[in-house]
Length: 609
Image 1 (cartoon, one colour):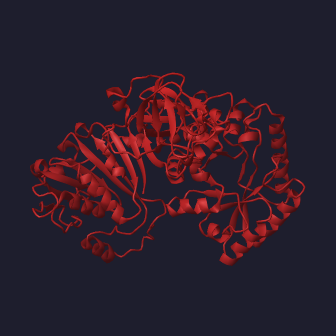
Image 2 (cartoon, rainbow, N blue to C red):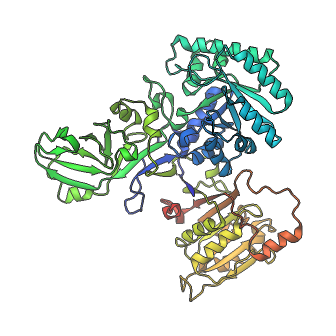
Image 3 (cartoon, rainbow, N blue to C red):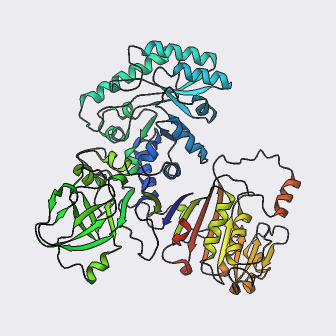
């Protein structure tokens, strides 16, 4: 299950205060916390620079280590027009999670499953030898493969050389006429866009223009030509003819993640917000004398008596072994890592003796941040310590580091139905009916008499499934089915259940009730104080009943379970009476918003487990 946790603040701020969760909340031992608000902010910024060109968000390498599914969704929400990956397997994984946006995969091997790509409506980059294999897979499926021809304009990697290009475009035109492929794009990759004054940039753009002309002369008319990466997108503003760089679409990767591609400009200089925070906690604090050796090879010895703190991340977690001296922020102070980085741990010298007492004990469990946004150390500091580039630092964070998803910004969606701002928003992506019910059971543990929830989702989205899980968590009697035909169902507490003496569950379907006045006719104000009340389709109708509520929305993933509109009414009614028409195991997006003083403070993080 992928999870996104949002908290409501201003989406247009370029900087957000570092967010530290209370130590009483159980968290992973180490995590890469990904701020989806930052992803959306960066996407919008880059899309604005590229306009009117479209924007392809590059989410290869598991979105540069940030998590491809969550990042893809956030980028698409912010206006990305398409997604790009290196490998077909990466694209298929996105499709498996219900993402139906245009997708391009451009790096292949002799074993690439082109049939699977074509069957999943994935466009394919063509650089040379894979041309015939793609055409053959298309013929076997009776489908047309959508391809982007790649020309090598000077980088020397994949792509047709200009010597082979004329023959390649003629062959492509012939295959297109035969119906096996459709050339929808032409692309290249810049080699020095992060050095705006490099003459190779103009040289590559000139070669690309000639390649496009040759393709057109061969009878091809691709709808999109694309050159610019993140640095190219920034560079274009200073060019005499920006459209030569921006063309029809830009492919942006590193900028989406809030990382500068330029050696002389920081993320803040570019208006980008770093999306990833790598954090863990202090696991040991001890006093040592002067001359104490630290880590393998004793490359560091304490110059005087001091206190050392042990941080449980190492090169198995993706921290480069060579990066001695990288910064770690503990309780608001940055310290340098000392000694050789080990597989599972690093050490920082706190520079103060005498911390082994109460003060030292207080540091146990303190958050330790290696890099992040704002006052936290930057990715750039770690890349410099490791003598590498920022890209490598984030992409090498290993799978044993849990990815957590937060959202420190707010969108229009973070306002409730009556325009009131949400205190927090949790976005979850259950992959099955069972996961939906587990989430509801965990939520039930936080509910008490008087709590009101609105529940919104199309027929089959999972509303009844969610309510059944809620009832199980509250410990009410079994038998929850849709209240469509009776408007209100009351489910008393089961004295033999998990919460004897707990509140009853009142389940309402307000779809046929047009106004708040009609809600009053069913006397919810009488049952509300002693019950947990769930009102399907209640937005705009029940807000007057109490000053606090949870707003829950369930959406099917894009393209998942799409109806052909031909379901018979009898089948729909049967689903309702059976308890649910929403038990299919297909991805959902489940959004929970906390409104009003009852839900002030942090969201229930147990929902993320």
